[in-house]
Image (cartoon, rainbow, N blue to C red; front, side, top):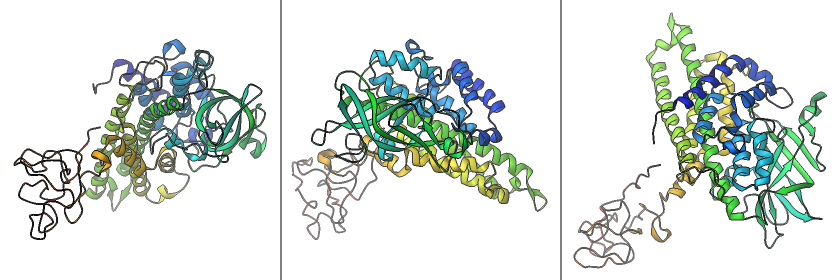
Length: 510
């Protein structure tokens, strides 16, 4: 991995930062979120048309810039600095990669150029609030994550040669304004149910008249009703979709391949996690910078509060945490783009990302943003606790981002599961031993019969010590005072295969 940015990447960051500094201050953000679409449409057209922001990671053959997840993550870091309300994540990180990976040539040609230039926006609709699971970030996406059975979720059936969708999905990112909906739905009936992706072309909402019109949009598609939901973070608008026999088109060719769908979702999830992590890092960076500037000016006891050592220590800790989160986000973006070929297939357009890299980076970035936002509110004092202060833009973003693709503990648990951190051979747990010295490993011990070669736990029953003696299956060797292998149950000390005590799990490089 080359940690240095290219000249092109520097130019992307510089140009985008300069534009957003002029057009997207805190006051502009607060005004934009109160419009019917929830973002500044004129600014979005400028970002998409002039800078090609939604097409950064799309191939040039489909009207994109031809870059990759790293450039998209860098752009998201800059939009995160401004807490920019836009359909960038929904379009460029969710909808477009899935259409590129699974769509037919006709679907790609018809949709991707318009998405790359901002003429159209898109999003991914997953019922039941299971977006993180669908993207394989908090759990495997090979089950009934989109609802199941005869009820629940969204059902798809063929009627008169046309697919029809019935059901509803909530918390759809930018779902009330997206022109292209990629909808996850079940098909095949109760006995042969499988989850596939479908395309719904929805017209943009018309002008709003009154509060109700602001929340509900006549999409022009029979049976489709989209309602903007109230969200704590108004810069991340969400919607509930109600589908009543809505005509749709299967994403891809043939009858659809559920395994290919799961692979494409996982590939898109790795890139989306890296983009969201970079965006969270950008938001935390701005929050920290504004807090540092404030404590330099705010005086108490006749001196700036930033001169107090306790305040300096808190800010220094946040800075170190922020830099670590930034490095993790960059690595996740690089990992998502490694081996990128832009070709078709279940692996998606970004190749095969390192397992767990995106989830771990996102977990670290979300924790960092939450810590920085909380300290920003605290260190701003009384004014920081007012709801109208800009510190709450960062606080709300931190709270809602974890609900979007989190929570943090599930991101880390899934990453550990993918990396095999706690799984040994035959499905046993690595590094855990019972109080009597029991517990097995799937790897053999060292040549001297000890367990130093592979970490904690005891050797498997089939392993042999260097002197030819077998290690009995069960709670360790029978040569301890109580026959359990050691006097304290932690393992024998004669080299018979049990370790001298429990060991920490091996570190996994991600």
